[in-house]
Length: 154
Image 1 (tube, rainbow, N blue to C red):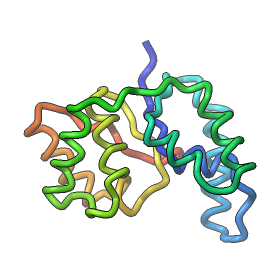
Image 2: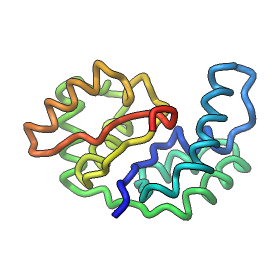
Image 3: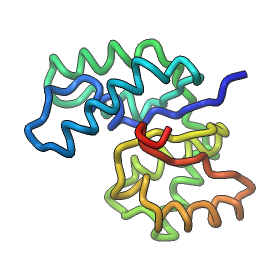
C-alpha cells in the first residue's frame, strides 16, 4: 500500500499556471511540475471538495486545466468529524478566522489519515510554528497530523 498524499489547492495551481516572473514562484512551479511528473506515482493522491471549489475559481482556461488534473484524483468526503476539527482548530486560533478553507484542508487530511499534506501555502499550512501547535492539538482529538510539506521536501 502506497502512502497517501492530500493534494492542497496550491499544488494544482502551481502545476498549471503560466511561468511566473517572480523567481521564487517560478522555482516553486518547476519543482511542482517535476514532482508531479517524477514522484506522484509513488503515492496514492487525494483531494477534497474544498480543493475542487478553489480550483474551479478564477481564469476559465486555467480552471479547466486544474480540473483536468484533479479529475484523476479521488476526493475525500468532508465528514462531520473533519468540519468539527476544522472549527476547533480555528477556535483555538491556530488558523486565522478568514482562512476556514485552510483549516478544512488540514482537518480533512488529518481525519482521513493521510500520510502527507502537500502544499505551497507556507503562511497558514506549511508553517513550522503552526504545525508544531497543530500536532499537539489534534492529538487531543485522537488524531495524528499528516506530515505537512512542500513538493521540494517530499
